[in-house]
Picture (cartoon, rainbow, N blue to C red):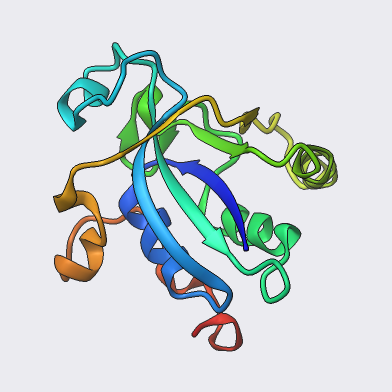
Length: 165
């Protein structure tokens, strides 16, 4: 079992996309990489806390290796868009890959380096050790499961049937 934290715009879509994949054991949405302690959604949206909307991903690395997690992540984000994904704009919607396991960093960096050749613009995805993560309010957890037809900038159909639970 491993953990990785992904910021890909609105955390509702990132969570819903990864929840459907084989090998994903758990997801939790929250706020990370900012200065405020245990911020509220309203504080994060103000842009003053420095936090990004993040999805904590717990996964089975034997079923879903780190490189596959990253491939999925790149399916659902525009890695060249700074602080904006879909209609969501602001520093809280930046893209990022955050880790605790130091062995993940070179794998992530190599993945980004290899992917850069597919883009004319530079990839602006943050790659950092996780500084902090605070669980978001309950109504954000499993939001798209609990709110059919709720807003989502992520195309949930990008996971092919063989990859789904």
